[in-house]
Image 1 (cartoon, rainbow, N blue to C red):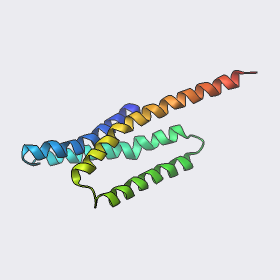
Image 2 (image 1 turned 60 degrees about the horizontal axis):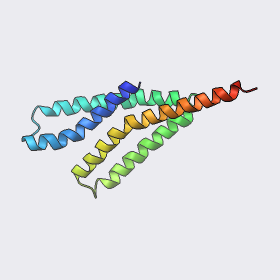
Image 3 (image 1 turned 90 degrees about the horizontal axis):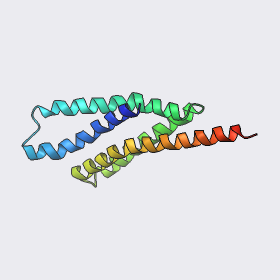
Image 4 (image 1 turned 90 degrees about the vertical axis):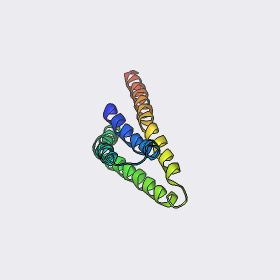
Amino acid sequence: KGFVLFIGAASFLCIPSSFFALNRCGGWKGWLVVLYILQGAGRAVYESTSKGIFADFFPDASASAFANCMLQTAGAFAMCFFLSNSLTGPVLARIAMVLSLLTPLGFLGATALRHVEEKRRRMQEALP
């Protein structure tokens, strides 16, 4: 699932990156189709794989995990809505790029933390 999450984050990274690259090249023309493909790939990963990751990380509290996921999504949408009036397109694009880069890093950190906690739990269960 980590590799698929990386593909989705890379897709979301390419969208704002193309904003900078294609504006210098003289226009979008046929490249607009590529943006739709990237958005579709990123959105597919968000709607499937990332929610599966939430379920994997919180198997005993899936309702709480999905509520947390929706809270994060709603907060991000609200922040983007309120900031879109005061920030320019290039600034919002850079923010999206940074968040796209942080997504796989957050997953790797959460995975490492989960392994450490499982190892600690197994060691405590092994004690008499």
